[in-house]
Length: 193
Image 1 (tube, rainbow, N blue to C red):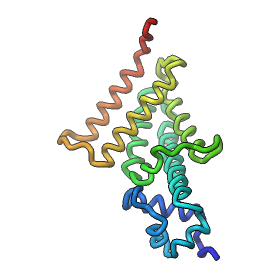
Image 2 (image 1 turned 90 degrees about the vertical axis):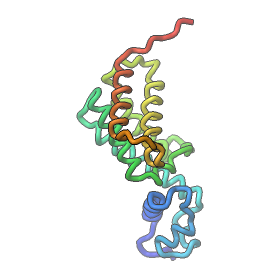
Image 3 (image 1 turned 180 degrees about the horizontal axis):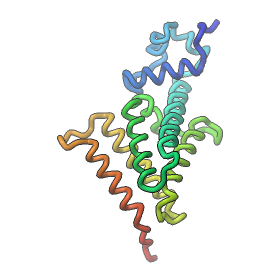
Image 4 (image 1 turned 45 degrees about the vertical axis):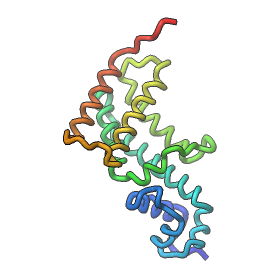
């Protein structure tokens, strides 16, 4: 019989919290079972495998990040929306580095997979940021990839302690967001074939 108070959602939430504390790569069913006060076989009543646990943590983190960015840009446009999205994403990764790490490399299995829904929500927020910029429809995917990879790269490097120079990280981040803003304001010059 499953332990009272445990269900798939509480197990995943405990796994996500554990990932933030010890790092995603160190989350195992055994360590999680210890955290929630059960023996490892008891977890399998709620989560079928280590892979399912990882996928669910990834989906949770992707949904939380999407919500943070979506909430931050509400009522904003252009540069203000870009700044809000960038800071919301960076703050989320700094607060939840372990669970966010779970999102890397996880591919949705179906269109209604929770990971697919979360990624679509996140990309929808970034698309909303782009609406105020003169980005050609054909370049939207490129612009989305630029925003996502820039936000992700800076946040992950910061979370991993990858910036060693003494220059203030906030100043560097603001400089980066300014660079994105200036770049997005300039329509792309398409190459002649």
